[in-house]
Image (cartoon, rainbow, N blue to C red; front, top):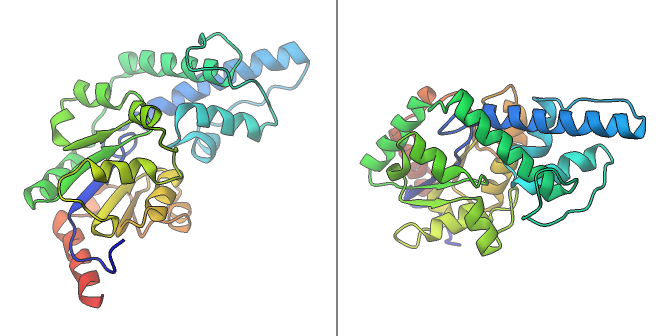
Length: 261
């Protein structure tokens, strides 16, 4: 990487919980999936049923991660081991991939039922950055990122998009590894160094990935009461919502870093 930051040249945004509020829909789909599976398993094995916690379990084990990684992470936390299976598994199969595919079906059904809410302040922030010649990318673990963006009319707002399908095709490691963010940078014009770019994330795994990728600014969005956790895992700054920040403020942050360097 370069020896020091010079100016903000690019910003890479996560989707769920950052541009849109679909993290809520994901959390609801995960809870329905796991509660149904855990209840069935408890009945079958004579165990006590302990439900999936839509806040604690979601943020600790699945938020920001590729779908199958999320399934494995949560099941491991409960001491449950099932075969990984393969991506083509039926949503009814008791495999990691089967459960992950079932979660995807539940998510899509809930999108149709609940719709997709866009954070208009996030859109304002992105457009401010674009007006100041900052290149804009989106990197999401979700395989539904492009359809969601198309549904809300924001597909053209991003110069580069990397989603879960791209990660699968390219063999990119999931967050908290930085692969998806760094790959998104390569798709933006100008051979941009991560020191001259920012990552915007709401998930602990996401801020970890941004910090591991050497990004000049990792901005955490605290959609839930986890400000300290985001900071502890790599966020340089945490805000509650985008009304607390402007493009000019971020540009000044990078200018100040350049002067110190």
